[in-house]
Image 1 (cartoon, rainbow, N blue to C red):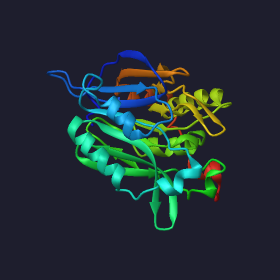
Image 2: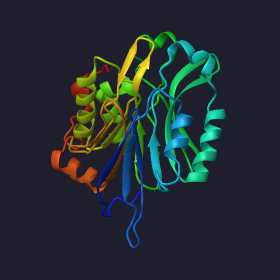
Image 3: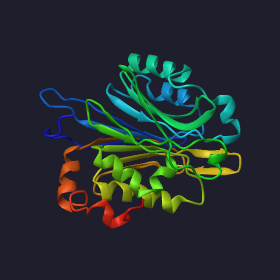
Length: 285
C-alpha cells in the first residue's frame, strides 16, 4: 500500500440483527486509494449467508474487506470442519471475484488428524491465506490444536493482521503483528457475557498501544449456554472508537485515514522506544 497518500474518514450506519465489521477501500478520481471500514451486526449465522447479504448491490462498493465472525459451535466442529482451501473457500472465491470484495471469515479447519480454529482471507484474485488461532479459550483445547504462526497479509490498501477472539487478550499477539508491518488487525470474535467490559477495553488498548486500526467483529444472540452481546467496534490507532455496534443488528461504514498509523506511532513512540526482549524476558519467554 502507498502510505504517503492522504486518506479521508466518514461514518454511516443502519439498524440490523448482530455485529460484523468490514474494511474496504475506494479511490476518488485523481487520488490514491482511501480506506473504508464498515461493520454490520449479524446474529449467529453462517458466513455464507452474511456474505450474500453484505455483498448485495447497493450495500458495498468494490474494494471492501468484510470481517465475519469466529465459528463457535464446539460440539459440532468435527462434522463441520473442512480442509483449507476447501468448499467454503471455493464459494468465497467465486463470491469475491464476482463482487470485488475481500472477505475474512472464521471456520473450522481439518488438517490430517487435527482441527484448528481458523480465519481465512479471500479476495477477488482468490485465496490469500489463513490464520490459525494461537490462544485457545477453555474448553477449546479439547477440540482444537493451537496455531503456531502470526502471518500478515499485504493488500493493495494496507497490510493486514488477523487474530481470533481470545488472541486479543494477549498483547504480545497484536505487538508482533504491528512489528511485522500490520496497519489493520481484524479480530473475528465470539465474545459472550459477562465479558462486555473486557471486550471494549482490549479492543481499544490493542489499537492504541500499537498504533494500528482494530476491527472486532462479534455476534449477538444465543448458542447453547452462551449469550453473545455484539459490541463490534472499529477503533483508530489513537484508541478512538470510530464505530460501535450495540446489542442488536447494525451496519457501520467508516472511512479511515491510513496516514494516522505512522502519525500515532511517531507521536507515542511505543514501537521505537521498546527495549531489547532480554530486558523483559531474560533468557526465557
